[in-house]
Amino acid sequence: MKLLLNLLLLTGTILCAHSLSAQTDKLLETVPKTKEEFTASEPLVINTINWLEDTPLDQEPDKRQEQSSLLIGWISGSPQVTVKLEEKMMPFMKKGNEQLMLIFMGGWTKYCLQNNYSRDDVQCNLAALHSTIKVYKKGVGLKKNKEMEKLIALDDKGQLEQWVKDNLKKG
Image 1: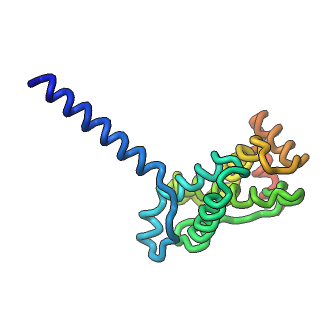
Image 2 (image 1 turned 90 degrees about the horizontal axis):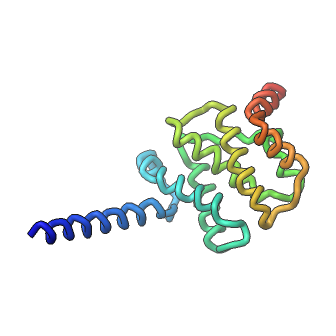
Image 3 (image 1 turned 45 degrees about the vertical axis):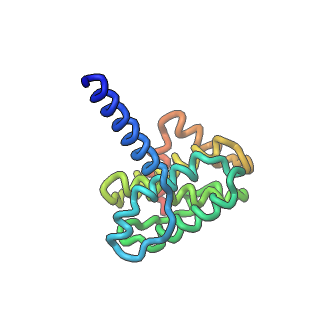
């Protein structure tokens, strides 16, 4: 009897873990319309952002395009998240790495959602740059960019946050 109960508990635990795993891997399927739908979809947005960051730019192009479009729609319509795009924060745009713009926006959005809808421009830009650096370092489908290399060096030295602060002040 005890063995049967233990087996049932183990089976239930495995099924629950599998169910939770399937839920955390779920990506955006539509762009919400109401504030409540936006709020409810936030975990899916974070999953989508993570997927876009983790999947090399040259893999699953159809899925990438679909998720990119849905994420742009979500960010554009969100009543809680406002991404501010400062040219100084996006040196990757100068050298033909425009696809990093979405990664930047995703990093900003993820930080904002994970930090109580933060509107801290320094921390949001810093998170956006960290996401961009993460994808840039993979080197897949991107052009080398001296400015991005400088940002990576600053980040490696722990000086990227100060760079963000200094450049936002100049704006």
